[in-house]
Length: 142
Figure 1 (cartoon, rainbow, N blue to C red):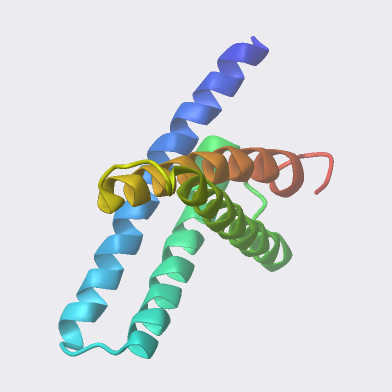
Figure 2: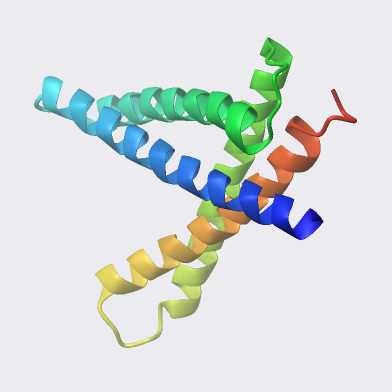
């Protein structure tokens, strides 16, 4: 029973993560297309905007479908954003660690970078799931 609940939540969480990634990238690229000659600062601002919107969608979808939490509030939303930012840190940290680990391997830099980024994403995905489940949408903490 517990395993079935975990698997259902994890599968829904994964699907929502894919949706959020698509929304994030789509919004980022729309902003980049609208403002044709984007500078580094514009890119950073656009990425912040797309991240916040995708993260907000993630909060709503995960609360409704993954964790079945009908009690939405601003404090929980800010906790969610903070937890998501910690996930970004975990992603960058592990991506960097793996990139450094693979640095001396004689292979294409693009492939090493992509593989390192994917591994970092896996770590942050697992981190985010457990943080959201245990601290944001935990019925005992609300």
